[in-house]
Length: 239
Image (cartoon, rainbow, N blue to C red; front, side, top):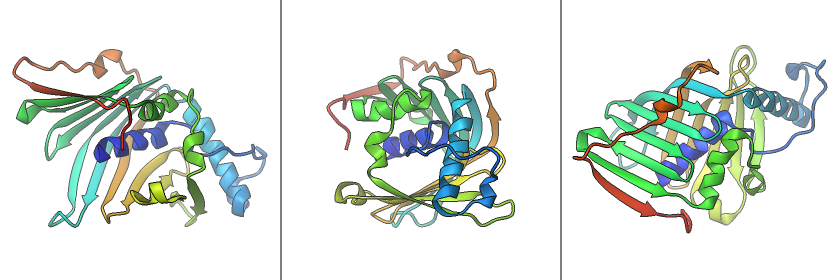
C-alpha cells in the first residue's frame, strides 16, 4: 500500500494543480525578482498555469530507493504516461518489469515475470488523488497538513520546494516531500519522499513530452489466462 500511495501522490504532484492556493502575481514581475512569500506565490501560479494546459504527458523516469533493509540503493527505470482526466500508467522496465495502472477507482499492479497481478479498488480518499489529475478535485484535504518552503539555488538550478507534514498522523509516515521545479518548464521534474522510518525514494522525470498524442489503448492491460490475479476491495479506506 505504501508503494501505491507514493506513486499516486507522485502522479498528483507531477501533473495536477499544486497542494495549496496562491493569489495571482503580477505578470510583469519576474519570479526571480521577488522574495519570500511573494516569490513562492508567483512560482505556484506559474506551475498552476502550466499544469492546467496538460492533456497528456509522457516521460522517462528514474526511481532511486534507499532503505535500511537494502544493502545498497536500488535504481529502477521506466516510462510514465498520463492522459486526462484520470489515466495514469507507470511502466517499470529495469531491473524488473512491472506495470502500475490507475483507472478510475482501480489500481492494477502487474508483474509479468511472475505471471502475477493485483487489483485494488481504492477508497474515495485515494480516488481524489487521481481526480486532481484533471484539476476537478481540490486538494484542500492536504493543504492543511503541510508547511511549504522555497529555496532557490539560482542560475539554471531547479527551484526547490519542501513540504513538511503538520500533525501527528501524517508525520508518523512521512518526514517531508522535496520537489524540484524546472525553471523553464515550470513543472516538477524531481520528487523525493523522506519517510518517517528512514526510507527515501526519489523520482526523476526526464525527456518530458508535453501533450503528445497518446491513444487511450496504451492504458489497456490484458492479463493472460496464466496470470494469477488477486483482488482487494480497499474502498473503505487505505492506510
